[in-house]
Structure formats: structure tokens, C-alpha cells
Image (cartoon, rainbow, N blue to C red):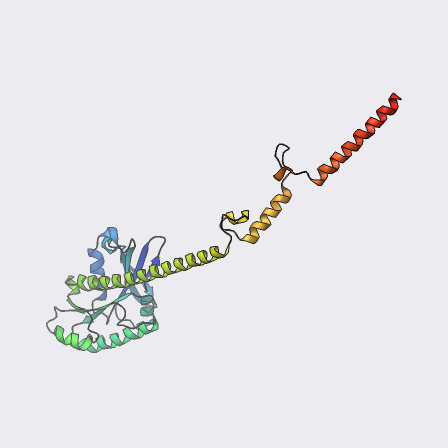
Length: 291
């Protein structure tokens, strides 16, 4: 399955060249890597996996843009006769497309059939089958004098009726055609995956909007008497708690500020009564001094 890097807006897809040993897998990949523009591909690399030699490289053609995403194709194969299937299991991990390189030699037809059966087993481990994923046949060795007719190879090997291409990998003849066809098939699958992700994203955003609208419908509107409803994005309980703390710590207002309603408080009334009593006492003292 293709790997999506939404941050870099890049999709990584894996293509595996599979088939009998010495059928032309390594020669095909090496020729393709050599003919691609070095600016859009990595070098051809090799590594030992369970005693077998794995070849791989990647390339990112400029024409593979999908909805603003660039697509990078990673090509893998295991060379020679492979006696440990674990090497192929590594290669098929997350595979997005397969080129089956069949040998046109009549004496190797049983090997072709055995490798096709093995291919289905590897894909079953990955939780898929051969027909759902992009798959093409490459009938290599068409320059052999004893090469079987294409019609016979198609009938014996291509029971799924996938696209088939004659090639002579040793001379690079026709090796681009299977890969070109397969990459287009993989791109079509990637577009479907992108559309599915976009549809899921839009559905999630729509659900979030519905939840916000449902929530706002039960909350007081911004024109209500409660001032806390004017602060968006906060819960009512949190706002009430914050406001109560702020009011407790707020210093007394300046004297020039008028209190709401300008009504006299109990404290002010008591102060006026006290002042009145003190004035009367002072008057009585003045009268006594005059007498």
C-alpha cells in the first residue's frame, strides 16, 4: 500500500520485479535506472538480505503529479537463484505493483508456473491477492531461437489476462513498456486512495461543524445579558471561574468612576449619620463655650 507523506506532499509506491532466477529481473531494473535522468532518480543500490542480493532504486517523474502530490516509485528485485523466501518477503512488504518477468525458454515453463504460485503465496502474507493489485507480465528472452510463441505463454501463464509485453532485457528492448503500463495502473490506485482520504477528511470536518452548530444552539447567544457568552472557545463554567477570581483580585475603582445607578450604599449612609452626629456635638460644645 502506498505511503502518504502529507507534510512533504509526496506518495511513495513500491514496485517489485519477480520471476524465476536469471530470467532478466536484474538486467531490466539496471537498464531502466541507467536510462532515467539522474536528476529524478537515485543510484542503483544493492544489499545482502538473508544471503541473497537485493537491488533497488527510486525515481520521481515530474509527470506523476496527483492533486499536488508528487509520486516516488521504488523498484525492488532479488537477483539470481533465491533459496530463502524470506528475502522476497522483505521485498514484498507494502508492495503496490508487480512485474512478473517470465522466461520464454520452453524448458523453464515449470519454473514460471512455480514462481507464479509462490508470488500468490507472498501476496497472501501481505493480506492481498494477485488480481486486486496492479500486475503485468514481461515475457523476456524473445530473442531466443527456441522461444515459445507469445500466444502460448499468455495461455499458460496469464490466467488473469493482465497486460503482457515481449522484451529482450539484454538489449533493453521493450523493458520500458511493462513499467510504464504498471506505473499508470499504480497511479490510478493512488488517486483512488487520495480521493478516499479527501472524502473521509471532508466528512470529519462536516461532522465537527455539525457538533459546533449543535453546541452553539444550546448556549446563550452573544446578545444575551450574560457577558460570558461573548468569549468564544471557552466553556461557561471556566469563564465563570476566571471572572470570579479576577473580580476578587481587582483593586477598588478610582474615585472619579461612578458606581452603577449612583445609589448610596449602607456604608455611605452610616458615614453621613456619623458626620451629622459629630457636627451636632461640635455645635453643642461651641454653645457651652459661649455661655
